Amino acid sequence: MSDNTNIIDSSVAAVISRLCTHPLDTIRVRLQTNTTSRSGSKLVNNLFIQLIRKSPIKSYYSGLAVAASLDTSTLNHMSSAAIAEICSGVFWTPMEVLKSKLQTYGTSNGTIRINTLQMSKLILENEGIKGFFRGYLLSLVVFIPHTMIYFVLYEKFKIWTKNERNLTSNDYLINSAIACSIAGSISNILDIIKTRWQVSFSKETPLKIMKNMYKNEGGLRAFTRGMGARVLWMVPSSSISMTIYEILKNKRKQRISS
Image 1 (tube, rainbow, N blue to C red):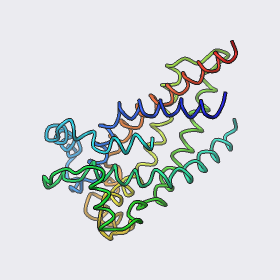
Image 2 (tube, rainbow, N blue to C red):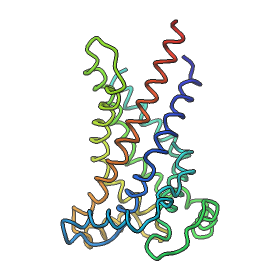
Image 3 (tube, rainbow, N blue to C red):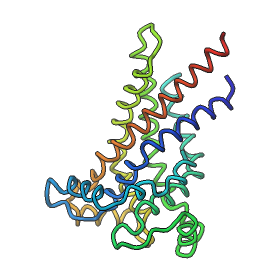
């Protein structure tokens, strides 16, 4: 099977996955960038309910066009994941910055929402070209370990569940969901700092953001904000994408062998 068919399969899977789960990603970004102090145990639930009630359905697809463009041995899986993240980050970091800013722009003060071109101009005016790469290195710190953990666990789960039989779509869904839940929870601590830095137009450094969060938003608990929403977004996104990819890949293999 050629590399081109693998690219087609993964692209189709990624687009379908993004269409299904982008609203959850929008909720995740808005929860992570909310700076309200966590004084009560029901705060996150209240924030979630407020987001659902006050935001029009269309707003949950802000940045979708940008997001849709993003989208062996243990050592091999880990090294492949790391190299892939380093190379792909050059392309998807600007898209991630645009997507996150579009998802949060105007949510706090009722400002009129703007489109991708207008946001691009705004970033250029305030930060120049480097503004599109805000958070690139921090993204690597977040996603390299996340991707390593995910793919190592996913491939191991596939081996453990195979047991001399062909894997089913349910197997792919469950394996991907468990692997993604673990990887997503672990990487959330740094992801919230990255997200806040990327959506901001200020000169604040990630270290200062981290200190302010710890001091003003409930200590260590502040870094778990949006974790549930992040896992709720990542699990179906990853599971749908990997399952569709595996199914398409297996069908192509069957056609070639027949």
